[in-house]
Image 1 (cartoon, rainbow over the protein chains, first blue to last red):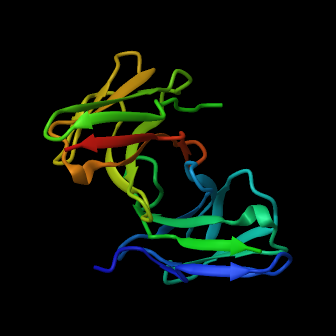
Image 2 (spheres, chains in turn green, orange):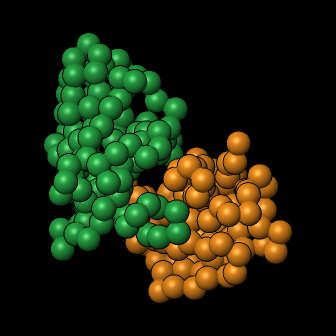
Length: 114
Length: 110
């Protein structure tokens, strides 16, 4: 079992550009959540996808959007990148939500905006 | 809004028990308490979770106060591989969110 895989592992983008990050959940998992982790801080919830719909959203602007595909994989899109978007972006998968089950995290995508 | 409070860092000797505290005084009745840990340059790893009763698994034990306003993660015999940032987290059933604290950096001395 490959677990949760994220791509790419590292990415450098210029201010104002757009970026797409990808996540494949653990086999058997149908729910994907995305987190932003700034250096030295805990992860911040961006949004969660279940049954191809955004089920819940954290306190992030509309520049952050996502998608879930029928095979449960997911994408995170960020438009009009700002320097402050530089962070580690983590994807977590679980069965039908994270509330009382174990979530599995990927290694993350390190995004640097210059 | 619910949040968790943890010490910034703790030190322990190898092969000794470690008690990592967490305060969550604004916890609601349906919030689960989770603990995850994160090693450098890795994604978080699940440790344990519970609702009201104390919980044990192969990695650790979770002791939850009777009023649920605090909890303690217990590593029974710390090894150097347990050095990581440990996060105490509330999971809110009503909005599907995990509410993360700032974490405790655990340093294990050989």
